[in-house]
Length: 407
Image (cartoon, helix red, strand yellow):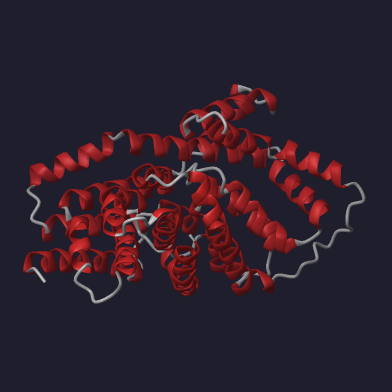
């Protein structure tokens, strides 16, 4: 292997070791990210002026600013829903519809996961916390929230990563969604087996004898979230525009005045969550600037394994390092050129490995938001995710080979 490439990979290992050791050492995320950014600057010999330009670029980036504004608006929306007891009443409607806590704690995060916004995890967390009660500890509640909230992210073409890979590979989104359906069942089954079956089914309430009324009530409690999802999926609105419009509509609908909304506006500003999000975006820009991600394909192509598995590993470890969108942008064309006729099966394989990697990636903002909401270490989410995503990835390989044989 080329020594320069090996040095790049070794530097990446050092950077992520710094982050993991900082977190395990008890530092809060913000301090851990600061340490990791400092290590990145030092180990890649980034000059002070260049480092300042990268930092300023990340700070003023539209992606950073819009993400932080979306987080604030979603938190404000959650405050309104809580203040008007909409989430509690939605929980009662779910109980009336299914009278099954296991379904409540899985279907609600999956449904809200249709909304491609990191801040939606906060609403999922509230429902999971209310549903589970004392039958799980905080770490388990945090993981269940994260895991089921992200299942839609693995296959829905409302997420940027999937849209990007579809465009670069030429695979139709509809074909990809169909190919992913068995794996979605697998994801649900794995989460259910490991965590959900320990929760008692009983809600403590008698089953409803008027299911349509409960369904209508659920719609009325969650209309704001449904409206955001519809605007994004059906009308192709940006997340920021959809969230901003619906949040503004909620003010008169829930009869808020400037005086009554002011306390919620203040409480929706959560410095810790916003600072953590900001620093993750800064760190991501530093990693992309180093060019280290480009070294991963060369490293893995030297391994004595089949080509499809090489690229699956590239997408996994590249996603851990820089996020799914970055590795998709860099390596999708390369993968489909190396495996002619890869088509839908190859996209299913690569997207599955990228999705799995996002559940343990320090660039995945949702993990930190959920960990912060439940006041648990982010590493606890990673630790609980590893067994499930390992099984998922291992079972994805024979499924890919089956698709190749069938198609």
